Length: 208
View 1 (spheres, one colour):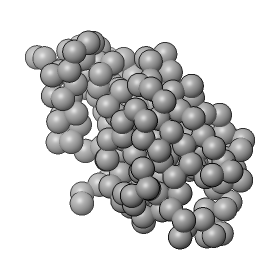
View 2 (cartoon, one colour):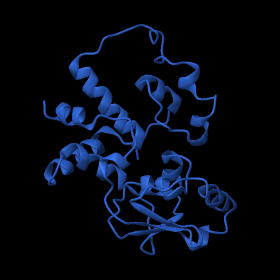
View 3 (cartoon, one colour):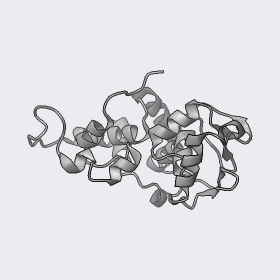
View 4 (cartoon, helix red, strand yellow):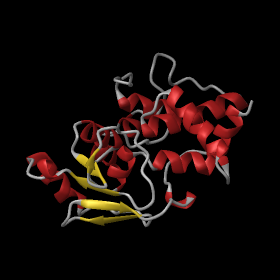
């Protein structure tokens, strides 16, 4: 499956905001955007005024990069969001938040979405008791996400569970560390989705 395999810190610098793609490192003074707060490349420090289309494109790219999604899949999510009732931009973010890798990250069982994606791909999680190794699997209200029994004795998994105690869980999720599981309680509200994206500009981009 195609995926971005380059340096993720370049993505934050390109967008000019922290996308928190490297977990704990993003909160330290080693964060690349704190040390070099300009776009990567030979002309990164040059000033360039973006057009309306350019601004819309940057918002779309930010959303794609936060969730680690390629263009074709992102476009399919947008089309699904447009078909649903309600505000298309909010629908889009809610779909992205319901991805299994994102839910694992939001439950605190991974320090970053890329790490959560890798854990899911390696079969460390179940949904309603069934092993699921597809990061893009869309969870639903009521779904129970748990660490697979065969993975619970893994040293890495034990460390992640211990670290999860220090990570806050959003109100639309419920976590039970003793059972090493979590539940999707409801669809997240817009103010509970803390990514630095103006979703209406994404809608405008795809509506051109």
